[in-house]
Amino acid sequence: MSLLSLRAVPSAWRFALIGALASLPVTVLVNWLPNSKADIGGGIMIFGAFIAGVIAALRSTDPDAAGFRAGLLGGIVGILTPIVAAVSSTIETTVIASPSPSSIAFFVVFSVVILVLTPLFGLVCGRIGGWVATTVITRWTATPA
Image 1 (tube, helix red, strand yellow):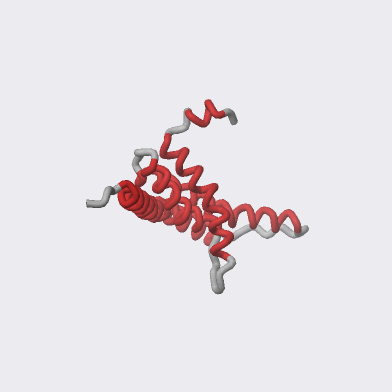
Image 2: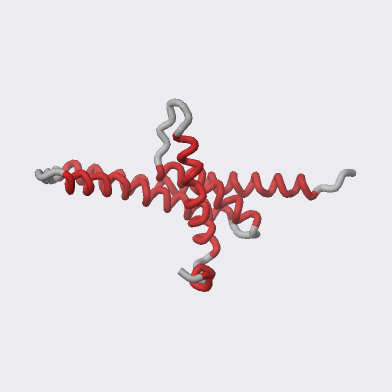
């Protein structure tokens, strides 16, 4: 992917992708804490949206939009993770068990719920990240009276 094609991506999506990638090491570090069960989707939704909000605020872009998109990316990763795990476990075994219709319906309903809620959590975390960045910058640049 060339730098020119990366510039063609809207800034909110670019900051959301950067925040999502930057949140992966943070999620690993949080997962090392005692009694922590951090997963990749949740880490992107919270930490990725926060980082995307910080970057967006520093670049004079809407941190809410970047956080919303990072939350959406976290939801997509959160939905795809069990699908990939199920496919990889069926590849390793010789017996392929097909899921029941009720379990498929359960998965579809809660996937929709996840895709509705994670962007909202991302929006809030992006807004908090933007607020933190704005507050820190204004304190650094403020002149003493």
